[in-house]
Length: 251
Length: 280
Image 1 (tube, one colour):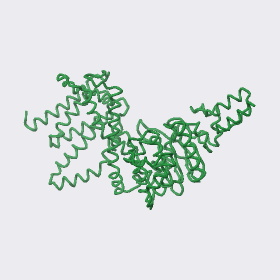
Image 2 (cartoon, chains in turn orange, yellow):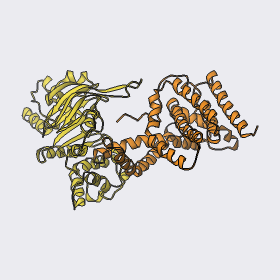
Image 3 (cartoon, chains in turn yellow, red):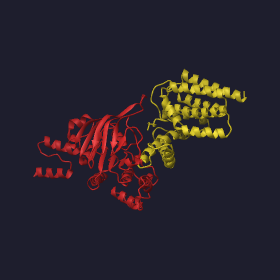
């Protein structure tokens, strides 16, 4: 019954990672995805994992907030291990795939915990800014991207509400064993999904009403300036991409 | 005693900067067939009391005894036997109603508490009528209902499985004057005719004063005053904890200050009669 409601939401503390400009954070996320998706090098993945752990530690968000999510997915990992073993993958390849999945989840969590929703929207819009040259309306697509990014945290929060309500009316989740818990989650998933989509639409609409200018530009947000740490982090991410590109043999 | 809170403390996010104590060393007991009100400002811990009784959360320290079941953090066997005797209506109906139609929402409790009933539809209609909604609501979508209607459906969805204890969290939020009157009548019927124990978790002192029998005043997770509903007439106490004196009491106090002697009452009609007698 541990409270899980902070997953995916902004964690309001002041840390070096919180102070990094949201645009740099998003660029770093995209750069991080390049070797994560493409490379199968164990060495590179261990270095990336180490960097991620350092970032998690310096974010001043308790590590248990990050690991709660991984712990929640433990059964999926076990199923995945069996699936990979049946495909005939080596131990090294299996470890790399597991690092890929967990790093991706933790990186997203890091972005959510350290970036407020308005900063995230600002960041997405700035990243999409080159499309301004094509006279493209940025408000709606960036709002849509942020809504999609927030979909999974919202899904988890809604799931908690549904599970609580269902438990109060006979479909118990909290006092059952793993089989009954799985049955409860599966039977309530359809309703959870429907409610999440509805909530996401409401949040998107509210966001448009409150702070979003759906014309070409939106109100400017005074956010953190790009500092030394941001540039250093960007540099490290670029090094990873360069390493990957060299590994593939493009350079 | 139906419910016993024994030195209950409830905290969330322990060991993090977001640590929060919702209830701090709270002890009280609840007698059957009585209307209780837990009155407190926002974040006083009212909702957590309801959730602890319903065993959807566990206390950090202490224990909650509900009938023969003990909620102290350990796994409760046959927890459904506990929950089918407790109906918990949340403050926000959207947190409680998750099925697509009103019929599915009402039948949910009956299905999972394994009621052996042939005429579920009849029971659904009866539950809807109790909260003042018609049969035509059965096939309506939850998302098409107004907040007031959703609130009524959430109450009907727990009345349908006939629990012994009914917990209403902020029952008057979103209700108009007429709906409040209807809710008041419904609570009185549930108490007198169906012998239910009612627990109101509210900050609406006007509503609570009219129907409650026992009051627990909460402030920042602690019970600061307990007793009969006369507590709600104590101006200093109420204002000290950020609560409003019931309007009817305010009126009586002003009249008494001006020399018109009116006795304390919780019924507006009795008050009008007394004012009329005084005027004569």
